Image (cartoon, rainbow, N blue to C red; front, side, top):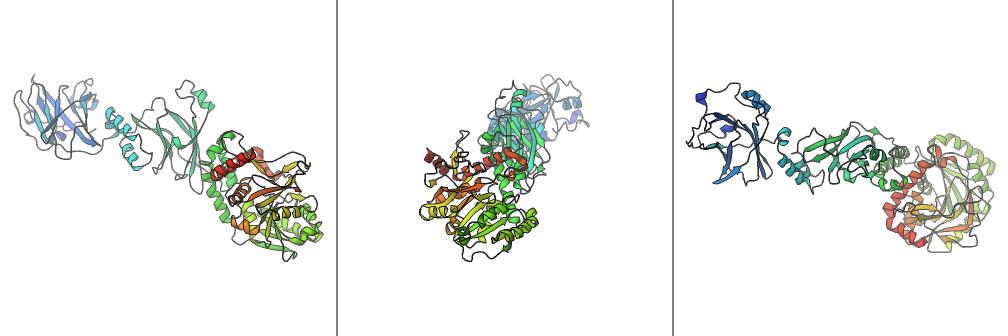
Length: 623
């Protein structure tokens, strides 16, 4: 507030403007003197009463006046263009004025006025009077700047009107800020609303994931806000049940709501202070605040592992991932792909077949356990060697020296010619398979996992016969067996384990005996594993190769099958072509099965986001 002007050097009594009872004064003040000097009036008892107008401010369609008066009987009228509007004053305590005037602080000296009178931009003035006294016209009033937060809090009706103006506006839009910027900061927490920011993770590629909890009324307006005024509505965040919050606030009106939240803020950086804000009819309040975010690893798997620290039940993880996890992980995956050298190194071990019918592309990463066993099996199948070229794509720079030494030795021992392609950085199975296809010469591509070992002869011929004998077949896969001769992989089907209309890939016939359905012919399946898949090169190129935007797991191979289906082709499993897939610890690694289950959920969520209706149709075909 402006305080009390000229009270330290009080004017002599004969300089005060005094209105005797019963006399009428015309506009004797200069323009808006009441806004710069104290007006003194004599009431009907002969007592001098003082009035001062501190603020005249327009708030949208409302006009606000603030001031003080020593008389609770003060009457004001607003005059403009011949119109007169009576004004109703609301009084409140002003200890600063009371102290300056030397009167009791119990007296309510301050007054507020909020009017919706139709005051346009033309000049207006006040008529000031005491009971049974003539009125003074103040002269033209001058509008001043915006209200201070303290002044705003004096006007609950104005706060309520401004708060109501937010309804229907989109958080963060310009018209929303126009309203919010008028609201004061409140020092008092809103009744019944609580919140806390527990942490935040920032990506080197931009964006922050923030998490915590909040309890609030259903229609409350809450949002995240950083120092750069970037905003994100809380109602767009992923919410989940927090039993610890339920226990702590068991008597709260909204204790049963999904209090936990996790949100992705695309425009916020790691060094920006982040707040959880709420607006009520009392003003703005910060429920929670965090000043730094932990920077995530640039490795997508490591970043995903950290995101999994924000607990979310597996049945809900797919719901959150497309809005929270994938927007952060995809740029990391793309950067990982771009970091590899554009021209990989290629090493030849032997000359091999000059005009191969099929190129065998074998992704190699993690360990070399099955490398020699795979070459030995190839070396025993002359029919296989006559029509193929073999390409190993090494996707682990740390194994390069070890692998090249073993490759040289195995080539000499077993006499199998092959080619090795490697990059300077890991790129993942999909990118490695694409690289292998670029350096191949066959009319067909057979993608084979480095852990898959042929059981005997003729399996490749069986795959060819299936593909060549059916124009509708786009790709064909083999039955993969575990070392105990049970089925390890027999193509994919889809299922909805959580009854959430999110379809997950599931291996067909897993664990059944190797000869299960052996008398049946090739079967159409939902998708094929990249562990052993044969496709014509021209069709592979037509669908764009393997999609590199998934995390390691079932995403890319299922996506590949869906793109074949989109072109009108079936994907087929040939049970008479059988190979063994050796179980390797690298399939789960140090992170364990639970981590890889979550990765599978993220990939499934992405599949559903891209192929939702088509995947649901696959489920209908299985019935």
